[in-house]
Structures are given as C-alpha cells and as structure tokens.
Amino acid sequence: MLRALMGGALIGAAATVYWAFNGRVAGVSGVLAGALRERGERRERVLFLVGLMAAGAVATLVRGGAAVSGQAAAPLVVAGVLVGFGTRLGGGCTSGHGVCGLSRFSRRSLVATVTFMAVAAATVFVVTHAAPAWSVR
Image 1 (cartoon, helix red, strand yellow):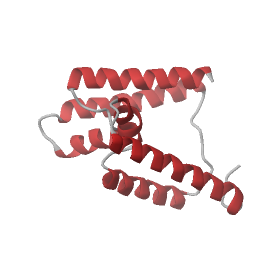
Image 2 (cartoon, one colour):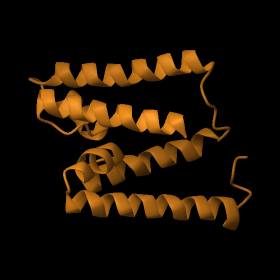
Image 3 (tube, rainbow, N blue to C red):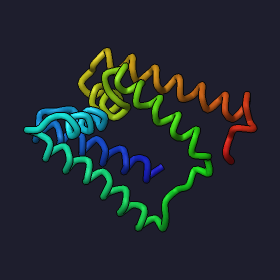
Image 4 (cartoon, rainbow, N blue to C red):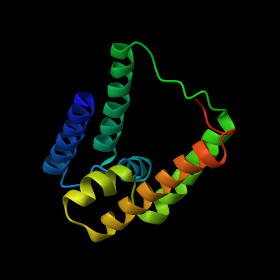
C-alpha cells in the first residue's frame, strides 16, 4: 500500500511540475504525438519520454528484473492498437484524463476516466470468470 501511495504522489508531482513549467497537461499520448509531429517543442517532449523510459529502466534494475506477462504477442499487439485508437477517439489517455483532467475538474475527463475504468473492470471479469482459458495466472 505504501508503494502505491508513493507512486501516486510521484505521478501527481510529475504532472504538477510538467504543468508548472510548460503549461501543458502531462498526457503521455499527447506528449508522444507532439514529439512525432511538432518541430518547435519536440525537444521538451522527447526529453519527457526519455525520462519515462529511464525511470522504468531504473525501477527494473532496482527491483531486480522486469515483470513478464506470460501473454502471447498477438493479444498484446491487439490490446495496444485498441488503446491507441481509444486514445485518439477519447482525446487523451489515462494519464491525461485520469491524473491531469480530473485534477482540473474536467467533466470530459471524468466521463473518460469512468468509462475506461468500467471497461477495465468488465474486461477483468470476463477474462477471469467468463473465459478462464484466456487468463494468465
């Protein structure tokens, strides 16, 4: 529980720092899209993404290895594509809506967050109860 609390506090602090210094929401999908498209602000966005990857690498080293899902590649690719389409359709990702949007009292972010949390809960239910052959334990 303490790790989750510390992780949440760090995510909130990071979003606050990004907003304070750049005046932008720290939504990862928007940062990535801007890094791929925009020329003028590409450097700040690339550095943000490099920081995300570096933090993951350091955490992996400190914790003693990466978590392995045990899932075949095809479902992971399909899930990634669905997340990508959902991100474009919903106008942002979980970090943009869930962390930054909710903290700004955005109704649109509230609807998006409730929707993806409900779908995630339904997915967990289906995979673990309705289709146990698909679940990884």
